[in-house]
Length: 427
Image (cartoon, rainbow, N blue to C red; front, side):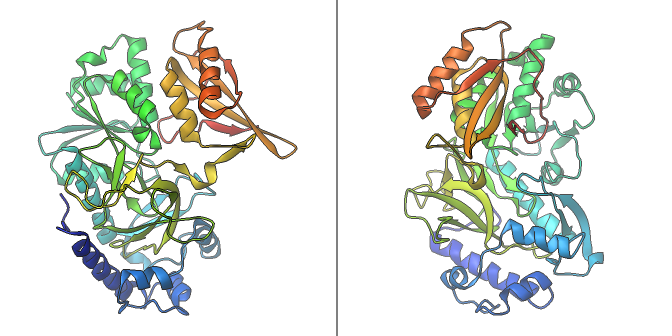
């Protein structure tokens, strides 16, 4: 599947070491951010092993990058080449902290496009397909790369920016688009609009929905909701970040398992308390080194994504690429302690989608004497459904041993999202 196919774990790690040596040779002389950061370490272009790299290379944090951009506005100092070499500028989503602008050279951009081609290949997309992008192309990196990867694979790319949800559905049917790219939330929103407009998705031409931007594609109940809403479609999950690029693809053999593109990234999973590698079967924070994004690299970057490694070194699909069980389990900084119980947004979504009957929801977070509480507003799919609140309340009690206040609200009163959903609000 990948341009760096490897027939063993050892061969894959040899490729990664060679790519790290090439990366360090390129960036150390001119990249001010990493020249300063690594100047008093043993990290250099002749680093002899991946273990030595992990041992001696310090972690890179989001707060460091934000601080660097503030001191070296507007683009920061993590630039390997003169500004005139850079051809793309995109903003981070601002999930944690203020958005920052990220620059790419044409070469770095093409490296990421190639990674997206690998993702498309894994999902079975080829030149015969018609891809509809239900996305308004703005400053966020979003599906820009996917669109250009589709172009490289010679698919028919159909942009959906600037259209209403109804117009997007009409375009999908008119152009017989068989692949849909969007967030999980927006795929459910399109299904909601289809029901309201009397559009039967049983007759939809869409056969594959490639989702990104949120962990929903690997959350079982959300995945089930998507497959129920789009009964002719298969869901393929993927995740990435503006700072690092497209990182994972869904295992062709196993839904809910994401493989890291290890030809492009050196992944680690660390304990956030000790910064050491987690033990087997433990969840930890995903750390990534970008092997081919020389123009704006990241070395041992703490992504903030909570993941758990698959036990198998070689997947049944044949790859040695690291597998992440359950995809992205949550964000390290998203966990809340509610009356002694650890609660992640992904767990809340899993419960709500598993119960079903909810068009949209919003979680309100309050604090009383430093103690956090949550309450949830829901829009029932059926107006006047008085049982749904009780069913949800019982589900939360059973799954999390928590009593959660559930309130029903009027239809269409909660916000809808095209990009990453922002369902959690602080009161």
